[in-house]
Image 1 (cartoon, rainbow, N blue to C red):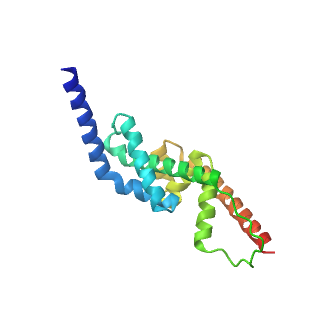
Image 2 (cartoon, one colour):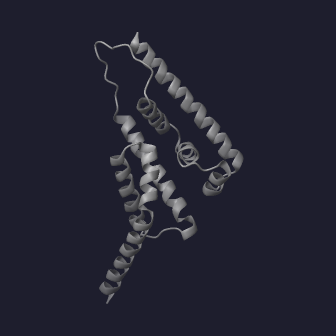
Image 3 (tube, rainbow, N blue to C red):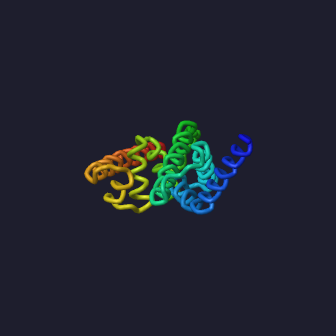
Length: 178
């Protein structure tokens, strides 16, 4: 009789996980895509988020917090992907560099993603919620249980850090052109 109960429990968890996936997979994918800029990575993040949810026993937070939970999980998993990518990336040095023009949007996006991966997790999450997801500071404060002042300071510091990283990238790019 214990086996029937275990099987029923597993089936119930699978049904709940499937329901959550069907209802929220688009949100998780879009959130991950905005951060990674890559559909393949976003799909990996989507899979990671729902596998982690299954590992928790398939239990999701209450409905009013479910989207927030899944969005934060997607942001964190996407940042993990960026950090892993950043750790494995090296810049190839070619013997002759042509004169480099202004960077295109793709180069700047890649630079921003690499720089975002260098932020601490909370700062990266706040930045992503603010600028990729379009939430206001008060909304972010409520979502993350932080004060609005702390959110504002975190956004300011994250922007300052990212500006420095992008300036450094531009400077290195300019020096390579010489």
